[in-house]
Amino acid sequence: MKPQKCLLIIDMQKGSFTPETPRYETDSIVKKINSLAAMFRRNAWLVAFVQHNGSAMDEFIPNTHDWELLDDLMVHEQDMMVEKFANDVFYNTNFHAKLKELHVNELVITGCATDFCVESTIQSALVKDFNILVVEDGHTTGNRPFMEARQVINHYNWVWKNMTPTKGKIEVRPYSTIMTLHEQEIDQS
Image (tube, rainbow, N blue to C red; front, side, top):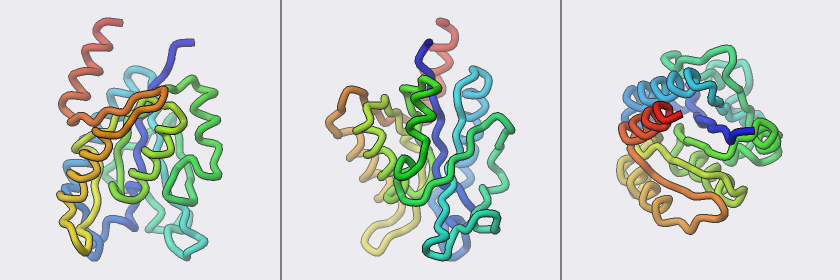
């Protein structure tokens, strides 16, 4: 079977996007995610929405307002919904097995928060030998005690660009480049 791709959308949940916890360029990130997801669906590639279940810490409890995905995200019935319990989407879930079953070898990663769940998932995916494409301007976070959100995002983009790959590869590219590359790939098939 031909290797498949998965657009991984991490923790774009209402509880992380509040007036008390503003995120960098939320509207722009959501538009890019929706556009990427539409392209993935048109090509029968997997779109996976990850939702953090923080019940153990009395937060992000399933079926509550904070647990819900942002209203502006376009979610379709065929999209995969993945519940996670730690920063890393692979930790104590069947997500890795499901991706292998579906012959997914490439992850295109977006979401929130850059410095927590996005970072943890990228590190974990790297040691699982996935080909990883991080959407450079498709993940977000908030201001931190010693860095503005934009600085955090730039820092992690730099870290990921300079990581040692395993059997897979890791790239960090802007949304516009990713859209162009995938459209070219589609035209050639």
